[in-house]
Image (tube, rainbow, N blue to C red; front, side, top):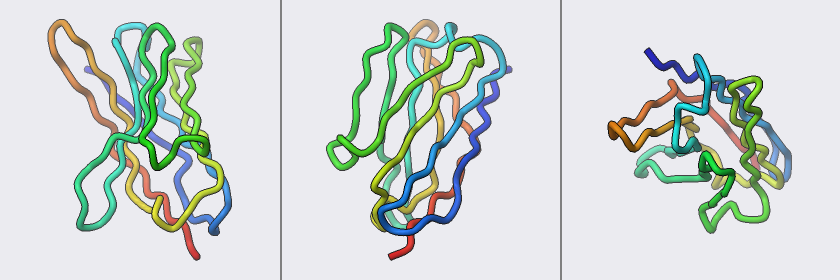
Length: 117
């Protein structure tokens, strides 16, 4: 049973920073990739950032240059450093992990990020 546990969300002012953590139960080497999605009220869930097992990363255009995804293999943890936060970044942020064979996706429970103007 895979568990992904997020932490680090909270309330921050416009222009502030937060770091989200996603701790996996067991080795993250099992996954082909891990990343973060977010969902704002009334909007669809959208991909924020992803890090592949080989280390390559990709970001949504809206967060490029402000957010950085990284991972610590020894701690089985993926991070999302969020700088220069904006009110539009307010959402529930979900950690996810996927495997290609068999095709499986795992989700965390979500952590709320609120950016006040």
